[in-house]
Length: 615
Image 1 (spheres, rainbow, N blue to C red):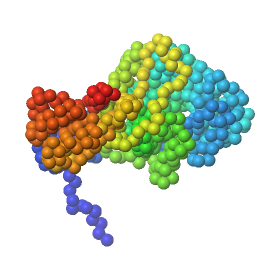
Image 2 (image 1 turned 60 degrees about the vertical axis):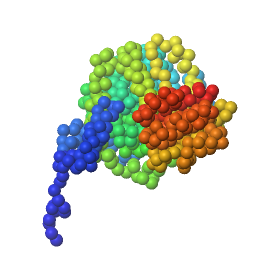
Image 3 (image 1 turned 45 degrees about the horizontal axis):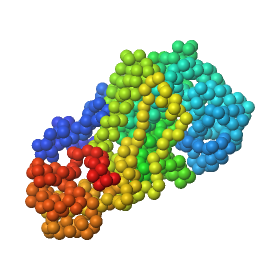
Image 4 (image 1 turned 180 degrees about the vertical axis):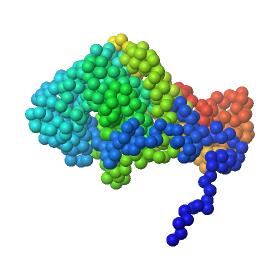
């Protein structure tokens, strides 16, 4: 058998070889403009990477389960807890539901306990029949009652005779979240963290301090913002707990990160890997215990990206989001049910949400392979790039006095609000796509009574009187949905008729664009194969009861067809030109006002159309 290496006769192409080939394929187009992705995260992404790009990266050089944990906290597998949030009006109802889902693949439960109902009896009822050392238990209560809850839980576990090391649990104690999100003065509560840690001292896997970066993600934050601020958030807790007399190891082992998952698939994989790496570096400054430097991360699929219309598309979003977190090696995942944007999730949507994770485990075996993304040139570079940009934000926060001082000054809130505004603007301009909403909407869908979910928490009044700024949140699709719901309430659904004429290629392309553009407002769109004359097209439009007539042709042919069509229509319907032809000024001089194309603000244009239609 020959010992000649396979493919030895082939030479490896150099970077320049690839660049030369790309330039040929681009046929003179600008490489930077066509192929280099200028992200919103503060760095650019090249169209390809090679082995030499990894040589100086900080993400390279460790194995799974080894410090700095960029490749995951575990070396043997990639298993994670499948979590479901349990809702119930009473402890008995929540307990019944928890017992039911535990038999359907769930091994992590999230309970929200009303502060006024908290008692030993409530917890006894809530956990009745649940094998607490077989599942992960997560609790949320008003921060002022977190210590009381911890004491009740410890007493319950002791009474039941559970071995402390076998209990996996958490309490969502996060006073800083109240400052950032609601502007409330909850700083004094941070000092209770020490008592919380001491209350669960015998339970090594009981996390009692939370960093809720997911709240920033659901408010429109970019990935580097969520990551940078979350790291500063965690560092603040570490610093204060150690200042209260705890060791760095004791403090770091009690912190849990709750992070969001956006739809940017590869970037989200890189985010979680970067989060572990950076956190280990921060924790290392407080303790020499490398095991304590592991970041415990719970990931939650995005609510910010969910939509009311075409809601089953939410399943596609949350599935890829879940895949990102699983591949990145997080410790637990919650999949937000697809209908959460407009109703309290029902049995069907919760079952689908569970199965989205079970599918990845039982059929795709995502839980078997540790850090499958490791070594990918692309993801390794993204991990390093995100880490660098997030670290800049972290350092800036430290320079400004820490996350608490930044929250008091409104610096964090202003930064997130600016990102949220930018993203809503980009969505309005169709530069950030929302499938099923501002791009490729379902033409025939109606809301059938669906309305956006609104916050019904009791802290709204307190937030209004809060001494600091808060963060006002709204889903990315909310403005389009409000527009579409307004259209639905109109006495008559507007009809938009495509007057297709001239060049076959251009009229079809522009008709498709216009149908998608106008259906986003809930208009009924009528497409056509084409008309021989503008008079024929106008007659057909009026016969169809058109409120809007959109002429679809090539730029060159608009000079021939647009003005005659406009004159023929004679104000009997709104006239729109699909495109931005060179003769636009000539058309405007003839009285044509309305143009739709990729450079207009889609949302504002549709609002204007509704206004003109009397809606």
